[in-house]
Length: 391
Image 1 (cartoon, helix red, strand yellow):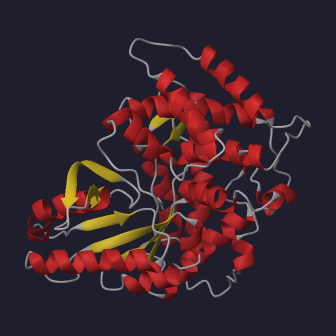
Image 2 (tube, rainbow, N blue to C red; image 1 turned 90 degrees about the horizontal axis):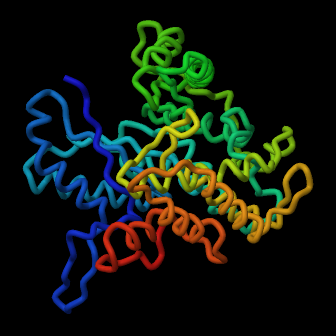
Image 3 (cartoon, helix red, strand yellow; image 1 turned 90 degrees about the vertical axis):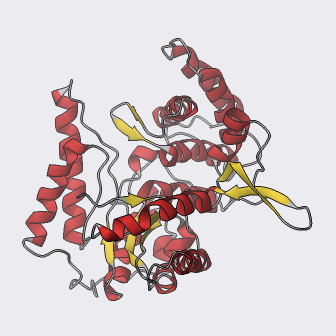
């Protein structure tokens, strides 16, 4: 029997189908995280335990130990209510926000009765860096997304600290997802994807990660081979405490290390961000949570990077490596060009996607999440609240 891990929505997302009504008449939409957790736990926990498994969860978007404490309280309440022993729930926390990278020890502590470990959510982590530091000046401006690889010093600091933190506490460290995916109709694309993923998983296994995940089933064997080569017959690498790793706050915040290593902002990167952002949103509005675009697996996180990079480049007065300034007017003109070049099909939602993309990429204000406004505007209408201060 395969192990099933359920991922509830982040705290910033609301559920339009349920509202909470207080005795004083106040009402609000229920957090989607509570709906997802509650329904799954109520209907499956006892049966999963009877089958020798358990209710396992994957917690996204946490920014602090206080949110971990809230989840722990919810776990205890739910287990007590249904007569299930405390600790039956196991949870893996995605470290995919910059603030959470500073509180990994505290997050593990708050969930100590339920924690399986931490996962390096690399794409959302890059988005969080841009979002958190977007107004902090030129040295915090990230170059093209394609050039911000996991070998950049500030990304290495984040992943190595995660492994060290987990293993010091006896918790598992889980690697992240490479965006490269195979194309069964194109052997050359497939081989390139295999090479990229092989190198990515080799690095993770050698760094001490205990496992990882991939974006496509054809990549499982490659990831498995790289971890088997390091693990052998061992189930994990918890004995590797990584005492050699010394990471400071300055290391986590050293975004400028990418530029010093030669990464730049390019016109091609700007156009790619526009193209990926709009095409992904078009897929999202048609109900697809992930989409293969230009032989990469794109999801909300990578779309968030695309649009937030554009916003940051405009706000910082950045220019491309060739010296062309990135302005709101230039981006708007490029958006029109990109959309005009897209192959249209019956029932497409490019008009809505373009409008939604402009609202999160070139408007003066920076929305915390692209999905919050799009959810209200295009999927449910006005009968759901927008969080006044989304995470």
